[in-house]
Length: 177
Picture 1 (cartoon, rainbow, N blue to C red):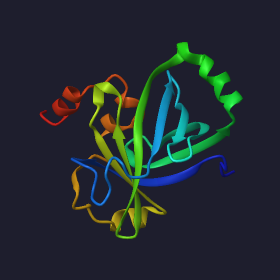
Picture 2: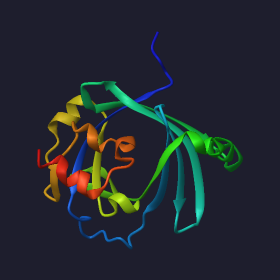
Picture 3: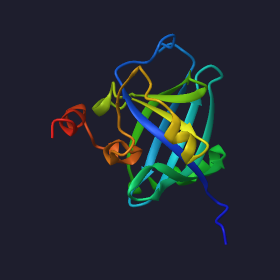
Picture 4: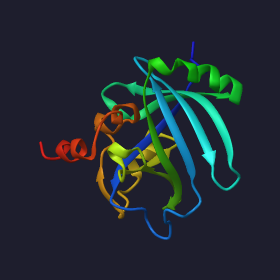
């Protein structure tokens, strides 16, 4: 029986030196606060839309379809209201740490790219771009964006919860070895 609770996404992940033009840090974006629940695949997420000052809340689960391939993920989201979010927020002692970042949206060769500019002080300035695809075939056809520095799709170091506790020095040393 097929599991209908997950959606499968195909994605490529890139390191960026800066936000591609015409975007700037002042461009429309979302403010995201991710709290990964320790020893789980769960992420308690709060998203603020600066323009409207509205919040949305969710409990997300994302994990690779195959542990040896970080380009395909099973993904599930439960939308929460503020009261439900606060119940999960009480699990503070089980949270590892919060990742804060601004998410911008950029169109490149007909695909939307999510660009995350990290604000957490330890990794402030890290910029990661993700392109999502509808199929593995489409994933294989797409080109390397000219504004990207390096593709890190298969590097587990850059998976959300693995950035907890990392510093910019850790990121730099990741490429020296």
